[in-house]
Length: 176
Image (cartoon, rainbow, N blue to C red; front, side):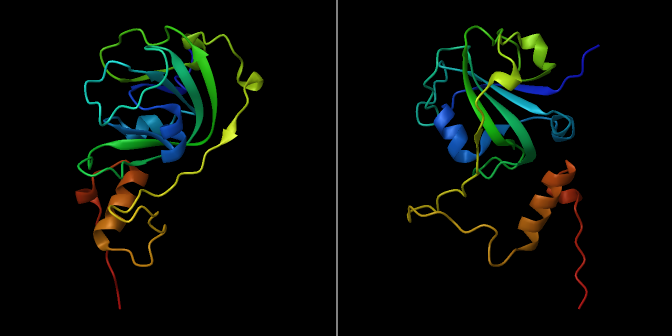
């Protein structure tokens, strides 16, 4: 049996947005399992009814991006406390039609060769991806990261993402 080293997602986000956000989000997934994967393959969902959310640009069902997974962290999006971002350190744009096979869930774990992309990893032109902090609402400027101060809630959220648990499962003790 071949190792399932790839997370395939069916996303309504464009490749430019994925590069800008540093990965693909906001997914309900098993962070422990996803952390075992090396590759992210994004396939395009052009049928998402939420037009404010969707900025899809690629043909429906096609694989349009392959990225090297660097981290699985909690999604910074508001209202997405139980969702995750698959962060990537580098990515290559591809165009392979019909990769998404109408699977039941929009997140799938596979072995990369199963996707039959028709291109070898060594033949791709990877570009570095650097996650940019989310825009501060109303200011149009990037929020600093790491923040100058860190709250207990923020620390719990970050540690929970690192260890694949819910923030409520993290206890922090400060000794003076």
